[in-house]
Image (cartoon, rainbow, N blue to C red; front, side, top):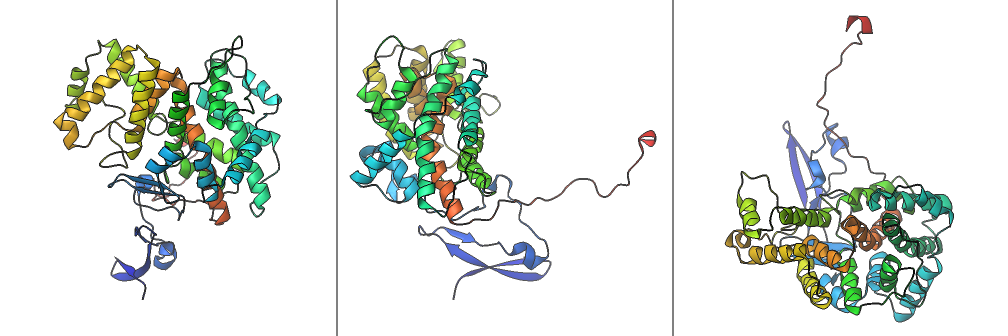
Length: 428
């Protein structure tokens, strides 16, 4: 006999089934709550206790510091796979064979040319426009150049839409940065890998060849893998709820980009660098700012430490710390901002206050440091996050459509005025 949860309201008892996930997570299925109780709902601001869907893509255990894509640990994937393999895994459910991976990459390259009229849209933006606003707009605009809707019942149609956006998105990412810096727009090189092409399109100067640095390629590859999916976060939930109206893939992704833009989500690594800049302007005393962070009366907030989901440690931070050390060592960057970052890291790892509260540097802290060292401007940090998250968003959108999930429609508890008769303007 299946387990049930009993809810008592005004003396009436109602039973709801208990469901379990494959990792023994437990949920109470309350989809019949309103109909069974005559209109009772639950209130859960921020949906911190509410499961919006069943998903086979990502498993996350914040208490134990576990992150897995389709059952594979993030540690193994970051060590043994490249970003395109992980993208394929997330979207299609299994790691690709060499033949499948080669075809995936080839098809992506075939779809990497963006309609030239998109440049006219880009030209209309001022240089002062934030690259995330540019990226969201251009991604949505792709819908106009690919107007046919995706037939989700057709594997071929779905696949073609996926390789189309996987091919064009890195181009839009690079254009957003080059527009900001007044550089001519670049396309990739078919002879290069996916991540190598991203770096080339972003950094190639018009008057000389771009030389690839294997340490930077490896670091960016790992960063994109670490950001590729993260369960039902703000932007992913936005993609799913937009897509639940049967909105197309490109516009659903554009909505996710907009959600990611916020400083509490994808903008966190940008916030880290802005904090470091502020500390530098104030003399660069890391001990002073660690003391401020411990003072409950002080409004200063230490960005890039601890995590809302991971209660012990962020497994992604352990992986990317090594890459950060390699990038800084290889480039030999002399930068007071990075020196301050290393000082804060050392303080946090040794200070008992932070150790006891498990306030370790998280992935946003290290990713900001790496991007800074690579020469990626701070306003592009969230754009790079979006590039990494792209396959996760696609996978979530695809899963939601294939599962034929209903349109998202949260409820509310009304706390406004009761009925009031209309008063003519001369009597108000």
